[in-house]
Length: 95
Image 1 (cartoon, helix red, strand yellow):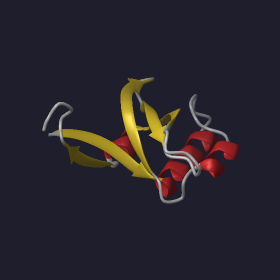
Image 2 (tube, one colour):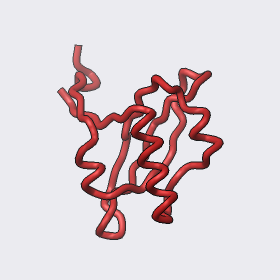
Image 3 (cartoon, helix red, strand yellow):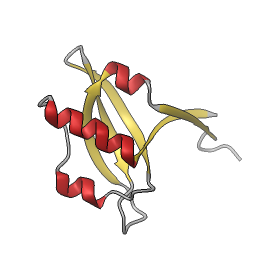
């Protein structure tokens, strides 16, 4: 089993608002936020330490009228990233 990090739309909006408020380097526009599926689950596909004080995350976001995820980048405090939900999924290649 592999562990993946996920977040819902409400939390993604809160983290993005915080990124905008604190002038972090990576956030998304209000227009994009409005396109998020309100019931969507968004997957962190990559993350790294950035500026020694925050995490830069690539998130595969679920939008309203598409089954294909949209890639976004979002910066957030380390403690916020560490509080995101983790779920176990089967390893690719597992049967």
